[in-house]
Image (cartoon, rainbow, N blue to C red; front, side, top):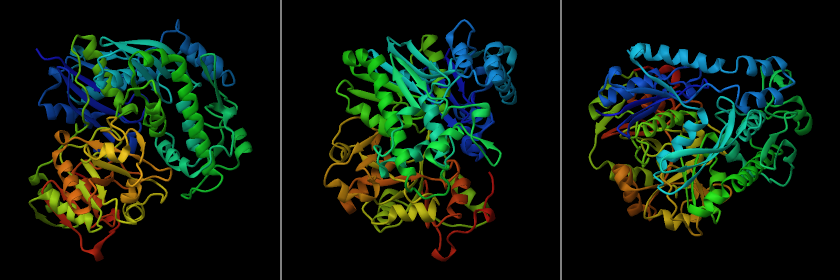
Length: 591
């Protein structure tokens, strides 16, 4: 009998997802936001994502051996709830609640999961639900999916799970050993999130924007050391300024933030608007530097001995998506290889919880080599979507898709590229992408302004052939998931300027052909035309929207932007130049 395990995330009221393992093979995984068209799908359960996973595998609820969830009850005999109560003494009702009713969130979440399972047709009397501690699920998603056979250091940094915020441990012989955890409010991820709010972005969504803004600033201009310190093996966040609750919160237009009025008194008014300017670019740079410095100090303290032995590190949690920190980690002499779980945020805990239970039950899980784990659509599906779309798109079936699209890119046209199975995780990796030719001057600005409608300073990333990666990045380190930045080699900065960030780095995807043949072939064709086997790649969506899932989603986005070319499988949709940018409200239909 095959071991079939369904992982469901969404414990923290955002980023619900589902993942399905059958005998250690990750058959399907998807985020709820893509199906319901609501970014981060807050306060939802992963119903559509789970339904997709089951349907894709052709199995029924009765075939599932267990459902793994990344949230667990925390005992009062452990330090977590006491630490929370002590550090939040200034909000006594919250402190007391942690001691008296500290697992309330777990029971509420479990009830919602049970409701979701019932909607999917599960019989709760015959369904085993297995809770896995949140940070253990993060750790499992990194370690078990890394493929590392040697003893492996494990790091987890995020806002918080049940109470833990940071995880240090190691994996050996398929088992995870916990060395140390920090607890709320002592959260480096939470501090970064609080400063993200101060800098005018949404927590859980804007942290990567702060990271993108940081290279424009001077990290030495302002000293942020008062916000947090790491001493004698303990991280302490200064809750006079950040990671605050209750009456200490700064409030604006009735909304409370995770920073205090004292922070505003120190740094000035909260940033608003889209412009990245002084002093906020310097604040972003200072926050990024503090995050990097403290993270590296913590790695030194808790994981250096393991790294000296084997050089392997597996990293997950929202903090693992900080690609600048990851660049610094790779540069450490004691790190031979860093694996960052590509869906390191909370969506990835569905994979982690299910992987953890699989290993506990004696079935090792496969190495994660790719993230093409979502729905795919046939040419017939695409044609049907075109036929029923109110914009009545002009389409044609084409041959030699990589050659045709490479020619469009080389001629300076951005192209929406919709191919194969949708990616799992926050990065577009050639399944649902907007592509451009990185040697064409101004293509990045055009995509920002006319297609994605986002801040002009936001950087773009390259996908490249595996033959090009070592040349352009001066590194042979695996980079299949855009989870690291690399210093771009001299000569290449001039060849592909549209994908080189302000600080001379690129967040790169280095692709082996076996994992996405058509995308690899496209880059090979572009190399023949331009000399560069590199393409500018950004996610197929507009600002504030989730990545595109279906052909109908792609058409809605296409007719709500200035894109002129959309290729879905073998179907090319072309829009007349004069009809560009039809308001989205006029064409927004649902499947």
